[in-house]
Image (tube, rainbow, N blue to C red; front, side, top):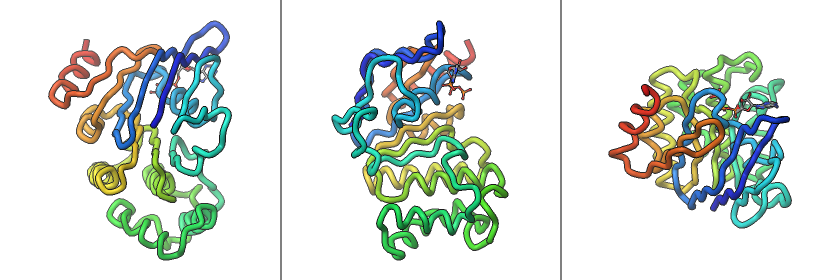
Length: 231
Ligand SMILES: Nc1ncnc2c1ncn2[C@@H]1O[C@H](COP(=O)(O)OP(=O)(O)OP(=O)(O)O)[C@@H](O)[C@H]1O
């Protein structure tokens, strides 16, 4: 599904990402962890062709993301609030996306119903602009938008950050359900080791731009990560 090879990103002398090879198969829930500045967001931004790599390539479904457009229709992402249209209400924003994705009103209704618990009656029908939402509610809008249009791949940068504990639990349930029902390939970066190990099938640990662990065994994930982060 996603193939990363010889990927390097350099700002002047500083190499901030250096990933030799990484394969993310279809349907995998791929977790990305690492300390501040490890390169998680840079990797996500390169995968989405928001930042150009210094060298190397990323392929989604065998297409180089920097050379083709087809992957975009099947890729959803929420990295930060710059991806939203702040001058719209959430309802207007979802309606705009509905038209872009060519979904019916019923499709949109069904999609948003999945988020009823997570939205907790604070997002839809409030006539409040996105720019005025709390950080947690902004994140909920972004995540719901990223999952619209039946994407094959969904990338979420720190999805649990700014969510209250109930919302974190609801989001976990939602991701697990979506993964099971739709076979979405999730790429999730997080500083929350508990959440990310609970929902992900695999955790990659970045340090100074390099992959230093690639953990696939649920039993060893938490202990390996705890040892690394406390050490
Ligand atoms: N435009 C830029 N110019 C120079 N350096 C940059 C630029 N963008 C990112 N960097 C550097 O690249 C490195 C990786 O940053 P990145 O944001 O990818 O890390 P991160 O793992 O997402 O960190 P965090 O956990 O703090 O969000 C950092 O040292 C950062 O300062």
